[in-house]
Length: 214
Image (tube, rainbow, N blue to C red):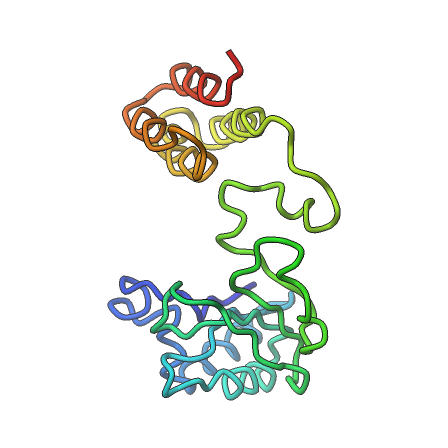
């Protein structure tokens, strides 16, 4: 079970008092962690950030509380909550952390892993870097980019329809189509077109046309 103490968006971190808000109340965070650890027989982890803002980069305190609460490991995003996803992620030295730390933030290609092990990280977590590029995990491990991304998009769409049903999957898949097409020629026109499609057959045709499969 992973407890998300890093989500920075206002509807979660401010209005709901959840996510990254728990970095502002370490006592409550500790109470939650101890309760979860005590209630389950499987490992518990947390995900957090460097702190609420530059004046409160107190991630070390929260990690120590996590360790004392029985949390097995933590993922640390290299930004404060105030930064949201702006600026470059900074990965501090965690070699003296009491539990294993997973690096997170701006990890998109294999070269982004350089130096993390030296800083004491036990691993790396890819977040937004995988959107529209689900093959990035294999790529980092030495694999290649697929020759025809359109085939991947169509397979992803089929999986979504199988799991959610067409009525739910089609509007949900629009954002994935946008991520897959980002940076490609005429991607803006493709996204506009996709946002008007409400059935699977038409969406499949649009995908095949955009990726030159027709």
